[in-house]
Length: 147
View 1: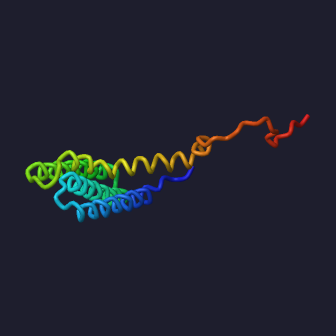
View 2: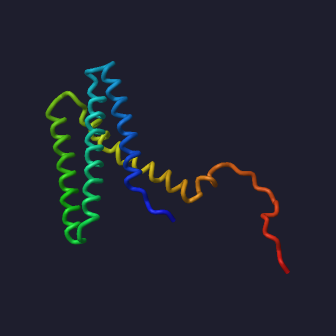
View 3: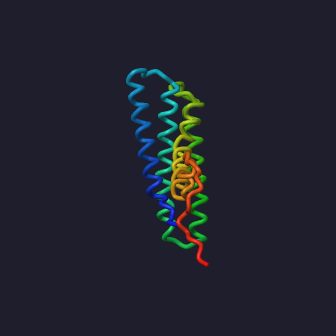
């Protein structure tokens, strides 16, 4: 089994999320006052911010000792939650973006990462090939019976 390419998967996720941000910006050119699109834009940007800095923290932690790394990881989770709460608070107090769309946008990046990883695991395990239709025949599999 190959090692998990976390950095590569995260780079793919951020690239796909960047395309989504570009799409949201294009839609905002057509409808600049749409609060739902603004919410998705703010939420997806926040999710990308959190994913990027999670990767930076994990890279820094891989070079430290275990006890210090655990404490720093918990501090990073706390900071990410604070960022999410601050963004949602800001969106709720200003009227330019829909808070529900912003909350959903925050979860776009983890969903892209999860579905991409699930696809990579299916592809790597060979299970994806068995999901395609194959006719079952009674041909010799190439193994000969030796007596």
